[in-house]
Amino acid sequence: MRFSVDPWDPSYGASLDTELGASSALVDPDVEVPARRWAPIDPMPVAQPAAVLFVDGVRRVDAQVWVDQGQESALALCASYAAGVMCCCPEQGAHLAVAEVRRGLVTTVADASGIDTAAGTYEAVPTAARADVAPMQVLSLALQRALGEVELAAAELARVGAGEPDDLLVVDGPLRGRAHLPRAIGFVKSHRSDYLPPQLGAVVAELRPGQRTPVFALGTSWERHTWYLRLPPAPGTPWAGIVRVEAPAGPASVELAARSQATLVRYASTEYKDSRAPQNLYPIAGLERALRRRLGEPAVLYRALRRAAAQVVPAG
Image (cartoon, rainbow, N blue to C red; front, top):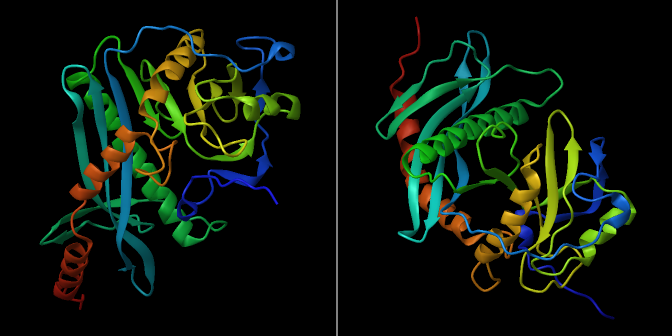
């Protein structure tokens, strides 16, 4: 029996769902070349960016709490989250350009106030309850939105302080909400939806390391241009090392595709250094480690929350 092993660490979930979900997105494969001429595209000589700015964020739930709202209590999350930018440039190499850390009380109680602790303040992050969504999922989605806002703020701050007129901004994840940022691409490591018809999807499996598919348009609640790229080293399975890169819809997307192809392969990780290789790019992995260190010690924060809760004097 012959088989191959995907190097992606299964503890992070699958890089590719065994059965990709059918997508309702509107797809136009003719952005760069007509669909009948789809084939793997080799790297082309392009000017390297003056700097590559990698944007990512991390989150951690420090405690689940119950917020008193009269006769009943509502489930809430006390969470620490951070976002930052790792800048890679010839002058300074890879260095942390921006790091923003927040602590939040994510709650459906509209008038909830923040929680002051000896380890810092958890600012109230209110969100609306939904009858059709489980409370924990509502809170988790709200936490993810709050993290996205910090990621956007970090990216904008990096562009002011460390940006170059010829830089490239690489956002870890979809570009949603950040498509207005100039020279920005979204870097999607795992795949849940099947966007291409079978005859074009077969081109993805044919990609060799460093090759990409042609650019195609993808329209859901927002429109963007996107393409698939295979990172080195050589694959063991048809979708090993495949990432999807996206850019704002427009004439610059083909140029960004060529630039991403020449740039991202330089930062692909290797199996013996990263369990999510090659998709977890080295600068992103380094940024995640730096941000997690800034979240603080979980046990210290948990004890601080317990002490703050014990000091609250019940009304009446």
